[in-house]
Length: 100
Image (cartoon, rainbow, N blue to C red; front, top):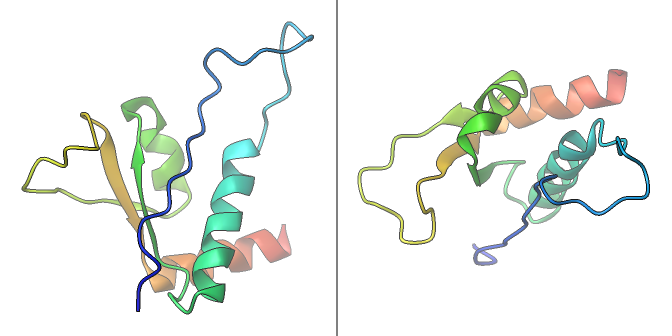
């Protein structure tokens, strides 16, 4: 069963704010948390896949996502990295979020 592709874009570049240093701590983690919970609600066991800017590779690895080598060039990816979160990693991610 599939709901089809879901697209969400998050990038702090060009953010308009009244503060010279806007507080963006944990925004990406909160967005990922929502995506994993939605995946669980849709009976996809918390599994997600996403495209990421190369500079975000460490962030996604620290959260348990695995980079996937895609043989065919995805016409939508435009050179972005592709990561997946397995069911086991999703369970660990959600458990860590509950105990944090």
